[in-house]
Length: 305
Image 1 (cartoon, rainbow, N blue to C red):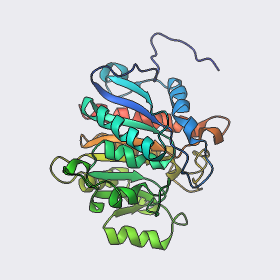
Image 2 (cartoon, rainbow, N blue to C red):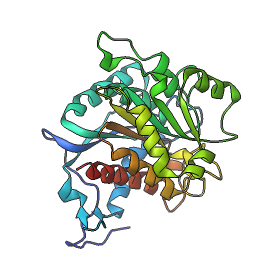
Image 3 (tube, rainbow, N blue to C red):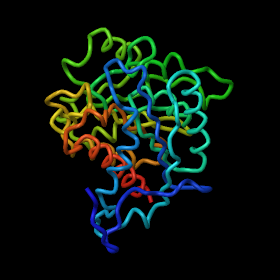
Image 4 (cartoon, one colour):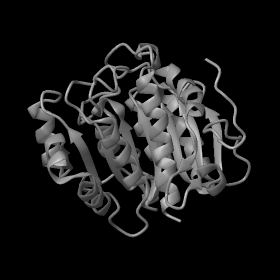
């Protein structure tokens, strides 16, 4: 459906290619081949870009602010074939090139396997996940990125590319009936801070965000990566996520979490994962939520100013 045009109502999206520097830059990472469930997640970066113009760029404040005026936003296109060893290496290299010239790199997935190369490319020292699942499985899949960042990340001569200390990992939204006791024990044994869905709702978004940033952002020169796995949401708002379940986060909760975490300058990268645009509801509600997460990340970035 064609969108109306109003010169006094700018729309989101359609941002130019990155030139020299930017406040924020999008990068499509359409991984999908190692997904544990059938997925068309490789179609999602394009779908998010298509959905963005449905929304404006105005923050109501007060005072009202247009993000297109307040921020330099760019789009670096897609990594064309990001799966496999060569694809992961390309993602790491692309993010490594973008990180020095942008305050925030936003990776559009794709399944959750993108978290591993994006966090490595951003030289993350801490990790925050919004996810119903631990992602601590063995092997290589969309269920393994957190474990891989702890165990498999290449140990390098400089600390910026070393493994993430699990004591600087916070997992928010872990839910009953979506995990195993074995992986819960692994998280506990490693010292990962797990904030369950029930704890999040008991304490509230602001309190949880503050604790997460304190843990993941600890240490001199901290660099935090944020993983937004949209299947943390209730299935009514995220039917395009293969693993979303009834009773998950409301859309407003995910949006508030994203803006809150992105408001901290230690957050240098983020990814949006596990949306299958080919399996969405007819109204595209899951992809639209993912697009709104992009805008919430930008709103958080603006809040740093």
